[in-house]
Amino acid sequence: MMGMWGNTIYSSGFAIEFEKWQGTLEEVIAAPSKLMHVITGRAISNAFFGLTNMIAILIIAVAGFRVSLGIADPLMFAVSLLLTLLSVSALGLIFASAFVLSRSAQALTNGLETPLYIVSGSMFPIALLPFWIHPAAYILGPTWGVDAIRLATSANYVSSSFWAGMSPGMAIFLDLTVMILITMAYVAIATVLFKLVERRARITGTMVQA
Image (cartoon, rainbow, N blue to C red; front, side, top):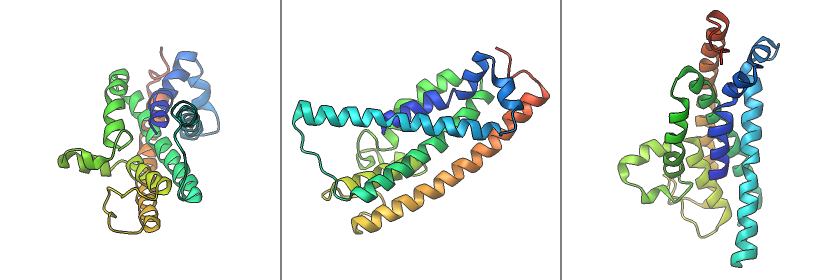
């Protein structure tokens, strides 16, 4: 999850800036496809590429530390991982557009990476965090995805979300439902921001300047 998020905030967040640096942003904006559609493909591919970190970690765990790996519910694990990847990608769309509208993109990237590792529960369960941080965790789609992945992975894991007393299957379903709703909100916000970016590019022409 940390690999997926790291790729998203850096690669997806700077996707538009990268086009500007390469001198191809004018062609991308002028193309028939919408700018958001182009960046969406990149965001998903960047998050998917982050899964290579998971493979490397599992290989090290098995070969180096002799950890016995097992998944309690392989189907729900795959579904949870895929939907979490899409949620992370949607969050990357917000950063991709917001970084263009802000002059502090680099500072935002460096400042948000580690806090989101912690708040989303990627480093450790959010139950270990102070209570006042929990609301920030619950508005992040990946928080619910991480919980669903852990539930699908281990039969002994107890959900740290609102579904603590429910069966693992129902808790996973509710986690994914909440994450999907949050992801839809991300897409709606990103759509508005991308319209602002495109309008700014067409009216002022300053966005394509190096």
